[in-house]
Image 1: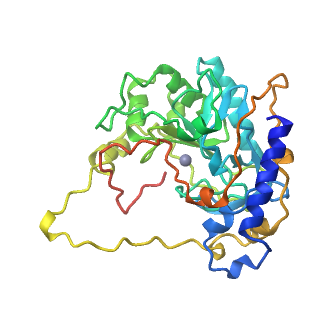
Image 2: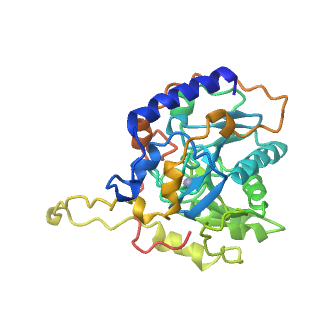
Image 3: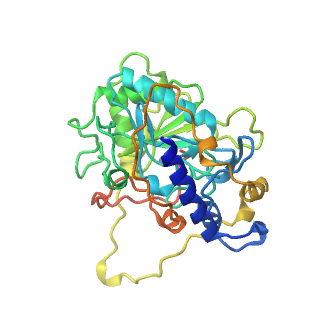
Length: 357
Ligand SMILES: [Zn+2]
């Protein structure tokens, strides 16, 4: 990222921050949703990196952002301002991008991570503590995308149209290798993929299959996989997830997805349908997050240049990107979908009882 670009982004950020919350208040008593409070923070808390709470209920101090371009990656959907995470996660993304390039994968398209101070964000249940990242199943192209292309380019589903199984014309050994490389970081605890992709791996991976235990089937995740690292050292307030089972997961638990997890909801008979008002999910308030998250919200911001990961490859010259001014409202209203196309026509029911991901 050039100096001009950094200056431009910093100016833009100042404008956007000033327009949302002009003074620091006692957020804990606020009825404003935690999502709104956290989406309005466009820079990280200038504190030492610390994670508070868990993947679906927490925040992060001292987060870093990944540069928009690296030698082997391009960050996507920049308007969401969601490429923030714990420094260790950023290092792993960089290391993975190098390993991926060695395995013939042109580079990573990096999707959503966390917000500058974490917290709930539009379209994700997790991604709250800077330890999650979505990585596209589409390799980075030779050319560098413009800002607009990073907003508009659709990711490609790995599934056969109208099916829950992988399309062999889209899947490739390089994708298997990419997941394997990600699973081999000791810090990586889970890789969430669509059940159809997990099945593909179960059916095709030969030799060492131990890494398959980290690859967990979940709804969605046919356009990208979700990489999650465990609680980093020095974050005693970080709440870890139960360890994934040691088995490869190519068993009854996978079969469940195709029997019921992915089964479309039975259609009610048309004439008897009574239209119910959509039930609004209860907004998470700051008071439901760890206490330390108020300090994180109130902390002074670290400036963008200081909070941006320094790329290891010093010879890399980032292209100039036409970054527009950040709009906090746009961030708040953004969706998490990686595809700009309408989702496939398969109705995917989400049973109330969700298995642990
Ligand atoms: Zn994700």
